[in-house]
Image (cartoon, rainbow, N blue to C red; front, side, top):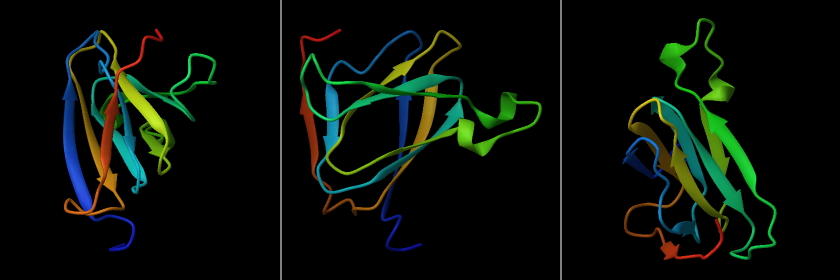
Length: 115
């Protein structure tokens, strides 16, 4: 597990908001778990208004009658642009697990005029 998880972060996004910038972890696979409330991770190969989006809608496990862990997780590969969107259920809490350590991870933020 050491090679898979070297950094853990808690991220909170206000309800009905999206992250204002695209994010990219150049050297880290990010595994994200929805902890409280709902949202989606929108990812794309490049910051280009023509790029195809992949949207992972995530639930939190405590609200499901029969929890399905696959509905709570998203995996974002290295060097893939993404941004979270919180739904109107409340502030969205997520926990992320990175393959790169805190001292090694390369986080890049970029504004876009798309959306």
